[in-house]
Image (cartoon, rainbow, N blue to C red; front, side, top):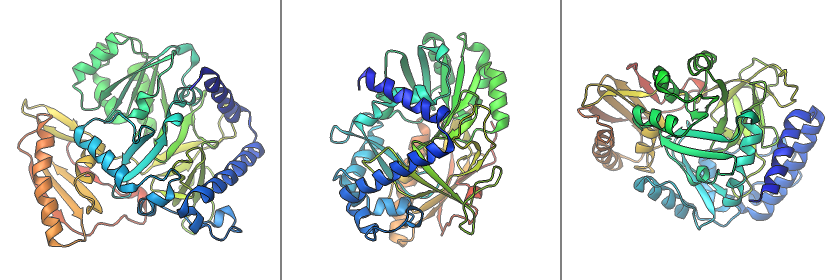
Amino acid sequence: MGILQGVVDYVKLNRHLYKYSQEEIEAYQKKELRDLLDYAVARSPFYRDLYSDGSAEFHSLPIINKEIMMEHFSSLNTCGLDRDEVMAFALQKERDKDYTGYFQDEYVVGLSSGTSGNKGIYITPKAMTRRLPFVFLARSGISLKNLPFRILFLLRVFSQGFADIRAPFLSLRYRSTMTEVDELIDALNTGRINILMAPPSMLRILLPERKRIRRTIDTVVSYAEVLTAEDKERFRLGFGAKVIEIYQASEGQLGSTCSHGSLHINEDLVYVELYDADGNPVTAPGTPAARMVVTNLVNRAQPLIRYEMNDLIVLGEPCPCGSAFRVIDRVIGRHDDVLYFSNVEGKLQHVFPDLFSRFLITESDQIREFQVIQTGQALRILIDCPNGPEAQKEIRDALMKRIPEELSCFGIEHVDLTIAFEALTLPTDKSKYKRFVTSVLP
């Protein structure tokens, strides 16, 4: 991607966020939705069939979800990609613990479990990922006075999409969230890091070691989990840095922080519909929605149109920054508890929920839902597999072998593991569902 295209993206995104009126935003979204629908119907057999009645108004079009998307992945994407081939590629990357590289040398592949059950695969064209540095620059909420950005990025895995985020003004170093704290402190100090990006659960682990960090951290960026107001203030004081949040999901970059510090819906990147239990639109600040339906406006390789997510948000009051983009007061439904075990040295070792989810969802396609319950060193895993005793025995045998092996990589031994099978369903109030229940505190 050329610098010129990047500058155009930066200027455009900033103009949308800070200059567009409500009427201009709605007009922009209407045009983008119409173009997206035309593109999807022309190139996706799934949407061509789904929208056979071309006269339907957008808000009356069928709503899809992850289950539907995965069932029809091969005919839903506009690139002619086969679901089984893409899934095999993603699973091989998991087994090899090598998350870089492109599928067919063209597409970044993401594998997600989320809060809605089994695996989901999400593709992003190479050309799109290479425009991300300027999107990040425009929508990160990070001040330009911090240029050049020297970022330490902490997440479970490092994908090719992140590897593509490189520019003269931005350097990004990655470390797994399972990295020893001493190594992370060394990376912060030797890399002259001025921006720390990590999930809140990882920031809580680093915070007690703040005095060992010799470099000045200008900005802490939180993502991947819910950032509570209490944690935000705790991190601001503890790290002595500005704390901002990015609301990123497999389905798109849903929210970004403005210059004032508020989290806004990225109205020009995603179209977000919020509804109450009766199907009425939710527009009032402070009112939790019962359903959240998202349309990704920019990724046409895998169109997600009226896609229901299990995340839910509460809208906030208009922001003093002046942007007409809706404010997110808080996100509910994304946070899972970190698991802690005593390791061979007698210390508490953390295991993040997304890592543990991978142990399960990559083992068998027959796992429909699961719940992990930890009490001390005892771990009870409940699995919803409706395919009978033979399939359940195969899953149990595989997990009884794999989970101790995976945990031993982090010095965790002598875990009392039990696996049981029962029907598990998401409750009506999706925000209350917890996949990970733990009584162990760090």
